Image (cartoon, rainbow, N blue to C red):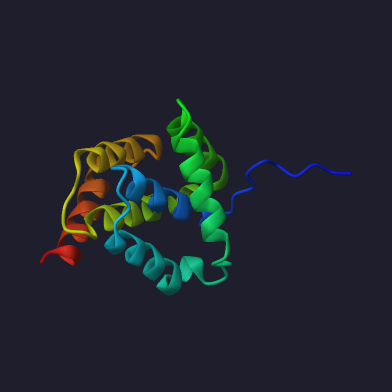
Length: 140
C-alpha cells in the first residue's frame, strides 16, 4: 500500500492557495475577493484543466495552516515545492488582483504581498509593474 502525501498540490492548487491566503490574511474574506478568485480560475488559461472541486480542499489547507504558528512558512514551502518558477510572477499577479479586488488594501494584505515577493524572489521592477497593473484594473 502506497501512502499519499499529506497535501499533494498541483501548480494550480498553489495559485489558488496564494489567492486564498491573500483574501484570508485580514481575517475578513470579502465577496469581491472570492469573485476575483473564481473569475481567475474560470477564465485564465493556466487553469484550463483545473478541477474546480479542488478549490474547497485547497482553501481548507490554507485555513488550517493559518491556524498554526508557522503556517505561513509551511504554505510557502508547499508553494515553492509545487509551483514551477515560471509561474511565480503569475502567483504574485493573482495575489495583487485579489488584494485590490475590494478597493482597499489592509496592512495585513500589504505585508503578505511583501512576503510573497520575498519568498518567490520577484524582481523589484517586475513587482512594481505587476502592482501597477492591478491598481489600474481595479480603480474605481
